[in-house]
Length: 165
Ligand SMILES: CC(C)(COP(=O)(O)OP(=O)(O)OC[C@H]1O[C@@H](n2cnc3c(N)ncnc32)[C@H](O)[C@@H]1OP(=O)(O)O)[C@@H](O)C(=O)NCCC(=O)NCCS
Image (tube, rainbow, N blue to C red; front, side, top):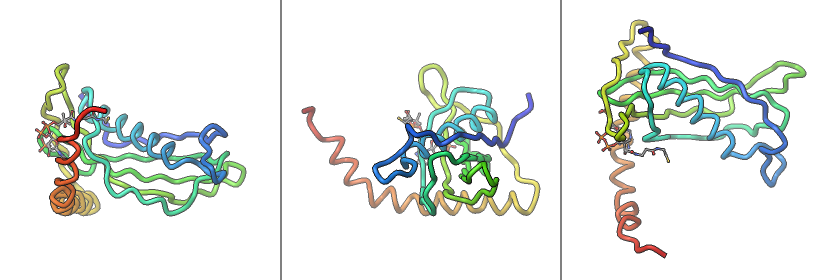
């Protein structure tokens, strides 16, 4: 089976996506990121996948209502069951067709079976220098994430201990 490594999806920022400041809601952009990364993960492994981690979302510029939003997702690293996907978001007014980068992040998806248990994915082997650089980038982020996870663990454990309202 051919594994599709990347996908670009385009969305139109509609009036329903507006925030209180008149621009596109950050949550709308995050949904498009998740959708493109999901399509990329499933296209790569051919199985159902779930988001396990979304990291480093920084909105550089606002997206405006009426903009075309182009979301490109590309596999940059695979573990045993995980796929690390770089996502770049560009947006622009279709009237002039100039697009600029508004967000970049790395999303991690895991392939799961019907019981929700992680299952192995086809390995991605970088060939070009560019791809080797992206894989090294994904690995550095993984290392950085360990210290972020350690820092956040007490908060998570506090939440796990919370009683129902
Ligand atoms: C994703 C899920 C199945 C993983 O289950 P798990 O018991 O933690 O499984 P594992 O510990 O074997 O980890 C599975 C993979 O996730 C990766 N992973 C776990 N935590 C991670 C994190 N914080 N960041 C990146 N990857 C992570 C592991 O490295 C492993 O990858 P590998 O097999 O390539 O080494 C489980 O956490 C889950 O169901 N989460 C909810 C997913 C979901 O519903 N998402 C939608 C949001 S509402």
